[in-house]
Length: 113
Length: 113
Image 1 (cartoon, chains in turn red, cyan):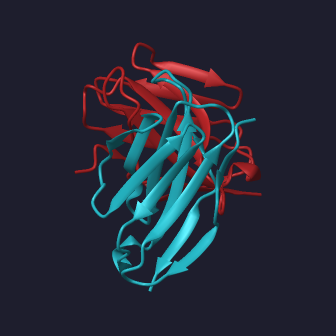
Image 2 (cartoon, one colour; image 1 turned 60 degrees about the vertical axis):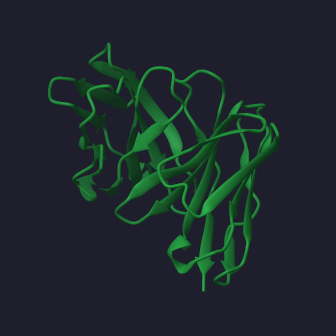
C-alpha cells in the first residue's frame, strides 16, 4: 500500500516556464514533508521541506504548497532551467518524533532548452 | 558539506553469497539509513539506526541485517543473496532531530546472478 504517491512518472517543461510536481498522501498523521532531487548516478539531495502547520514554503525558485484537507502537496519551480532536469521524490514523516520517512515513487522532470 | 560514502558503486555477486555493503559518514550524525530503490517503487527503507549498536527494521527488512559498531559506519548485510535483491542500494545519514533532512550517498548498484 503506497502511502505517498507521485502519479506522474514523468513531466516535460520548456525552459523558463513553471514546473509543477505533485504528491498525494493517505496518512493524516504525516506532519512533515520534504522534496529531494536526484541526478543519474548520484544520491538524492534535499531540496525543500514544509511542516504541516504551514501551507507554503519558498526557497528561491522552489516553492512547496501543502493542502492538508486534500492530502496533497506540490513543488513549483519557477523559472525552470535545464539543470533542473532530474528525478524528484517527495517524502513524508510518519508521526512526530520518528526518524522514518516514506518516499514516493518519483517524477522524472525534463526541462527542454 | 556532509559526505556519505558507499564503498562500491557497482557490485556483482552470486546467489547464496553473503554480501556486505558499507557506508561511512563524516559528519558525526546519529542516524543512519539503508534504502533500496527500484523502478516504480521509489525508495523503500530496509533498516535504520539512531545510535551505535541500535537498529530498527524498516519496511522491507526480510533477507537483510545491519551492523553499526561505530558511529560513522553502517553496514548492510545480505545473509544469502537472492536474485530479487538485485537493486540500487542507498545509504543516508541525518543529525539528531526528526526534522533533519537525510544526506545520501551515491548508491551501490548490486546485481545478484
